[in-house]
Amino acid sequence: MKNFIHLSPHFPPNYKSFSAALNAEGVQVFGLGDMYYDQLDPVLKSAFTDYYRVDDLHNYDQLVRALGYFTYHHGKIDGIDSHNEYWLETEARLRTDFNIPGLKSAEIEKIKKKSAMKEVFRKAGLTVVEGIKVSNFKNAEAFVLQYGFPVIAKPDSGVGAANTYKINNHFELEVFFNEKKAVPYFMEQYIEGKIQSFDGLADNQGNIIFQSVHENRHGVMEVVNENIHTYYFSLRELPEDLVEAGKIALKAFKLKGRFFHIEFFREHKTNRLIALEVNMRPPGGYTLEMFNYACDQDLYKSWAAMKADRPISLDYEHKYHVAYVSRKNFYDYLYPHEQLIEMFAEEIVFSAALPEIMSRAMGNYGYLVRSKNMNRILEIQHQIHKLKN
Image (cartoon, rainbow, N blue to C red):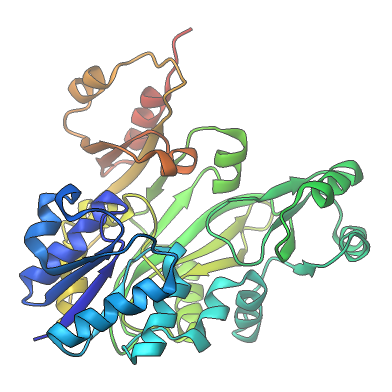
């Protein structure tokens, strides 16, 4: 019987489905978190064979003691994951120290650092957003002289759009150097384009089990820094050039046995694809639910079956467009929630409040809207975001 540790299993709330799916496949699931057992969702409680609480998930010694406990009482650990980008390095270190299959510490830099990602993209022959590590004001000025304003500055190793700056002129460049955190930063060209992502799941041999494409009308940086709405949607017809570029990237990063989320810019002027970054975890928020609603599948179950070493071969089609549409509490919307559900009972297939920590990027409340017609999706998105005069 397989033994699997779900790290930080309670966050985000929908990821409890990973533990439930593993349990359904006959895997022994061990929860490792900082929440008291009595506070856990009943779905998690019923899925766990055992649970170990630590005071602080950032305290590595406590995590080591937890894994020692699980190993002593239950035997060899076959897997550990949170499916959350924030814990990628911690998971890799634990896999390395306890000889658990999966991404190890030696492999983590190329999927965490923007600078390292770009070198992998380049070697694979993909066009990249040009950028440099910013060590001082002088080399930042030299980059701007070559590529012009605006530029984007972001932590070389960071999660989402935290501490990311759009710099439009020399004054803002000076402000950036005065305000930035004391961590390595990476500076990039600003690209006028939309973000399209190649998303899915690869099996233990690196073969793609499931693939999808999502388009985002607003980048996470704009949503967070300007505090605007976010919405993004899946495509029913997957662009051939994007699928090809995504597969090249997956091969270059040697991804196996994981979900993936690979972001590209689709440049407005040229329509060319420019590789931005790779995330070796599920796309955030409720995107896994979007997978499932778009194709009438259960990707939680497929992932769990793969982890249980069962053969996986999905027969699916992209039957629907599915959009994630957010709302933020400080806006005064024309239609209350109850009226939206009544107006679009056929198309709104899911809705939920989001944890406060996710609200800047994902909104305080989110809707999943499903339709075979993209115009209908955009019409409903407009109504969800419509404000009172």
